[in-house]
Image (cartoon, rainbow, N blue to C red):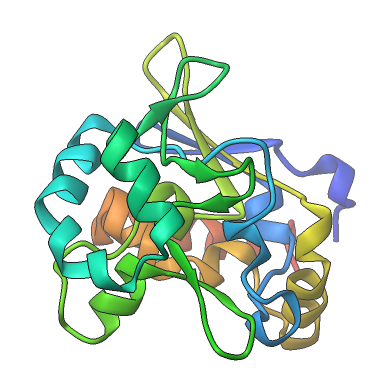
Length: 204
């Protein structure tokens, strides 16, 4: 078995570069512990594309009544997106804290209004893909390739511990959103590439 240091730093699947951390690290969200802290912590909202801005505008009425008054106020004033310090489109946040599209449940958990409505088949927009892909962060490179990197955030320690206990790699935990973003054929090629690395003794 080769050492972890001998693994290739990236896998290229089509026009997507996948960091090996997405393959070797483990992760599984544990809402019972973190209470949806990723919808609260941070200094900016979730990155969104212009297409997602249009989708959010189309389904806003589906989730409007579940949003707190503070969210409704800022959306009425500023719209469904804003621009962060790096020039990216992001969701609005409330008092430098909660995402404007989140709400708190009776047990103190912060939930995405879109995903809540999606699960009830009351909305056809699930949630921003940047949220669905977390802890993977996507970045488009100057050469047009897309880079997927694993983001290690202190508030997700419980998710790392749960993932370790379940032996669940990041890419498997995120199978559904990765397929949503890049397609089933792409994900199958990723799995085949990982299987070949295991066959060669380069992965456990």
